[in-house]
Length: 201
Image (tube, rainbow, N blue to C red; front, side, top):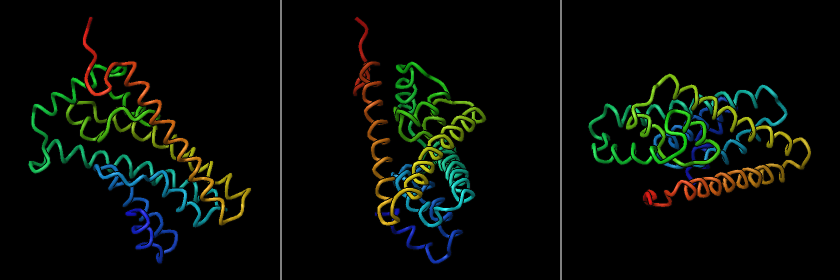
């Protein structure tokens, strides 16, 4: 898997290399190629599980990297001709968000709990959302999500054998991701957007 390859590439650089690996994994995920950073942060945390500062550093670095990745995609869609979305696609994206209960930048915060919009950087560009508010919601949502993952990882490493702890943590993360997807599906069905917008009676 790509995350494992990236971690192996930087592993020889110690803790700094692990932070670099996390940055690369999350940047790739942010610009549109899923790398499941929630899983890899568990294994990276395992490089130094006894340090509170290490956990805090991971949350901050992961959150800033998530912000940077999303805004990199925003720039690609907004500015770069090679990745600029056709107007009709951007119009469809705006129409999609109009069917949701939350229609503005707050969707970025909701998206951390129930992923209802993919490629969030592209949606920021297509919907013309305020960049400052978008940054606040992206960063605060990332801090919350990654903090939960790091806390669960710390509890696992603190109470279980070193060879078992990461897999228990990954299990918790898998449950979180599955719950998020289920919530997302339920939300979309209630909004009548399980593929096509619900038609008015």
